[in-house]
Image 1 (cartoon, chains in turn blue, yellow):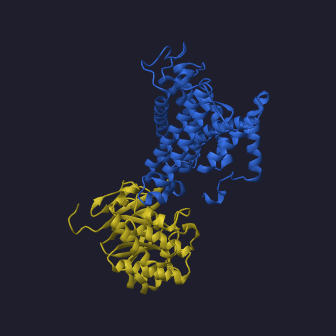
Image 2 (image 1 turned 90 degrees about the vertical axis):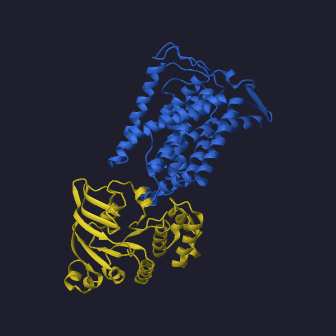
Image 3 (image 1 turned 120 degrees about the horizontal axis):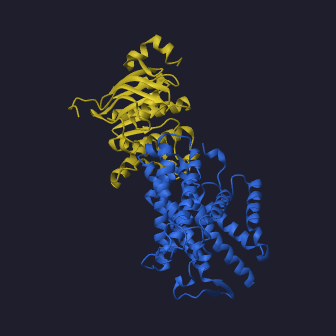
Length: 310
Length: 242
């Protein structure tokens, strides 16, 4: 019984991060109809930002070798700040890789290539600046909190509880924002019909920026959380998450916010069910699962049938 | 600004291109405040392009778009809405995943005065009582005619100075065409300036003050609605057998 609870916890905490990650894709997809392939790199940058803000030092490689901020912020402050910094990066990506194409009226699919390019540049930039080694966020970061908690007999790492709690809060905030706020309503209108939204007086360029900003914020927070929970395994560590996030996105249904959350949790749980000695097959299990679902429901679990999107 | 006698809207020598294809070859058009002007012509003549240029969805490569005599060629769409230009697009384009009431609320996007918005909402429901009955229904579940009424109402919710409609009769049964035209005529009598793009010339000219005929990107004929209705050659060549 405790084993099951533990498994559930492991799965949900990983899944919640996947959900955050996939929601970033979803936001941009819903307004532009394309995937932002730089999303994984923005997630990675969020992890590095978090590491630096809590007072971590850059290693011996890279242009910034030995750099350390003269302050060490507590994790609860460093994480949202890293999210904001990642949002800024996402806005730059939008400005450079997306907007020029849109202004010329190019095929939206071209943004796949430019965003992929932006992602490669960001990853290389990280390597250039801080080197390729892995960094881990010290356990002491959480201050006086114990490393593990006992919940109903199951031993759960504090980090996982935080992962789950923070992701849950962000997901709730996001859905309140989308359904309750003025800019959230604008986002829905742009997502359904950008031209009509403009004719109603909605500044769709601004809505797209907001979507990128929030998407980057979520990615940065997810990066910081994963960095804390596991470690930052080098500049490329976002790529695996990027692919996983795409899987989550497709599983849940492209463009569906609840779908991204559901997809994330399901893939997280599916992975947690893989026994430790077979953990090398985790990705095979999650993508195999995705494959099976798509055979039955090509539009994803909560996606709308394609006919809706012109 | 060119003084008080400048028309509400004026197009001078307007040229619009889509890539290498020229859609409008320098058209001229004036709409005075309070008029109902209809722009007629066959498919692909450039009627929709004219409206798209006025509302800033596409920017002209030549000529001038004047609003109260001031140049507005390069304004973005949300700015033209703010000026008082409301463009009800072809094919209705209601937001099908949102309710009738939400669609109408979005029509008032740039307005802040809640009291005025609420009273305009009641006017829309009075104009099209069927929308009031279906206010909480999803817009996608409405019939074509109801969607058209919703699209027109949504444009009215911006409280425009100029209402531009792109083929409101498209795909509607004759009875509904008559209903929509009657509503537009009512709005016109209440003082609203309307630029109506139509293929259904008969229906449009019945309620319009003046008409212009677009042919392959140029204006080929124009005159009062009575003149155009009486012109048999025009009926035959451009306006179809209606």
